[in-house]
Every structure is written in C-alpha cells, then in structure tokens.
Length: 278
Image (cartoon, rainbow, N blue to C red; front, side, top):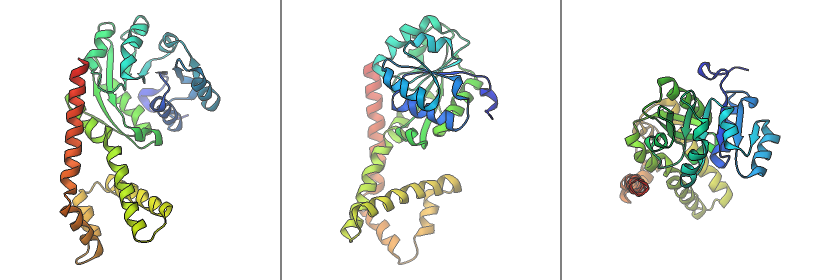
C-alpha cells in the first residue's frame, strides 16, 4: 500500500466518531493515507463504533485512553462543550511524542495546550460539512509547539477529504464565516435557481439536479483553471446574450453585497461566540 512519506508507519486515533470523525476515517482509508489497521477510534456510543469496525476494519474501543496510547496522532472530533472533560480524561496518556489535532469549533490551540502537559504538540483545524462527501474546505493552524512536519501531517489528513490550507489562527473566525458557514449560503442559491427553472416549466427534480451540477461544475472550473472568477464569468457572457441579462439582474438585486455581508456577519458572530467561551 502506498502512503505519503511522513505518514508511513503512523497510527491515527479518533476520539469521537460523529459525522466529521466518520468522514475523516473514510477519507483516510479511501486515499490510502494509512492502512485500516493503523486507525483506532473510540466513542461512548458503541453501535457507531461497531458499524465502522464491520464496514472498514478499524480498531475500536469505548476507552479514550486506549485509543490515545495506541496512536501517534490523536484527532479530537468531539463537540466543543465536552472537549475540556475529554482532555482531562486523556491528559495522562498524552506526551510530547504525540500530535493532537482538534476540530472543535471555536476552541483555540492555546486553550487545548493549557489542558494538557507542557510541550504538547497541538494543531487546530476548521473543516466544513462538505468533508462528508470528500469535498471539504479546511483551514489548519499550528499551535506554539507544533512543528512544520506536524502541520504537513494535518494537511495530508484533511486533503484526504477535500482541500486544505494553512493560516494564522487569528483568521479562524474569517474561515468560519466563509467556508464553515458557506455551504448554508449556497444551498438556498441552488434552490432558488431551481425555483426559477420550475417557473419556466422544468420539473422540480430535473431543475435541482441541473442547478446543483451547475454550482459544482462552476466551482471545479475555477479550482482546476486557477482563473479569476471574473475572467470565467466573461467566458460565459456574450454581448447582448442571455447570460449578461441574468448577471445584470443579479447586480440590480445586490448579489455581491449580500454575500459579502453574509460572510462578514458570520465571522463577526464567530468572534462573539469565541469571547463568550473565554
């Protein structure tokens, strides 16, 4: 089995196997980042663990400390409100030879480091819901003790379920407003586009299929071509044609300002919630 260089021989442990945890496990196995028997997972809900064991062949346990002891990399895939109690539970099993990766929204790397032994290597990660279909958008921020290799390891893991970038942690609220909340901004757009087509006579299912594929295709064009979205828009709009009339209508209704403000307000709310947690 081919594995990425810095992951060879590494064992990955998951604490929490909810939607995001399961998506990551499946992505890692599908991309052959590490073999199935190098993945350990623990959860309080045994039926979910048992399902993953039977389907994927990973190692499972209801004991978080057992998962930590058997792993080189520990991914904390639990809800923010229970993260502190989980960290208290596993603290004695973690030393600075292990890498801790957290996907708990709103919890700073420094807050996690303060709950663990001095020198613990922590990387904070913000994935989004599209990771569940291997099209995630993930931002990665290393803590003060994390090495360059630790950051590269996190990138390798999260690129198995989409795209990943490395940013400064003070930009995480912006990421929350953009890619964290962003899918919820796009779903109404798909629905609205389909509604327009239904108004013009297309059946609902056909309209939804075409609208969703149109959004997916447009995004893929930009990712592959690396061209500016304005340039791609100009490729579709011919003089006096149908597309430019539609674009004009969107501009009349303030489409750009609406999306800009949605991201700005979501980012602002993320900062507010972060302050409440401190």
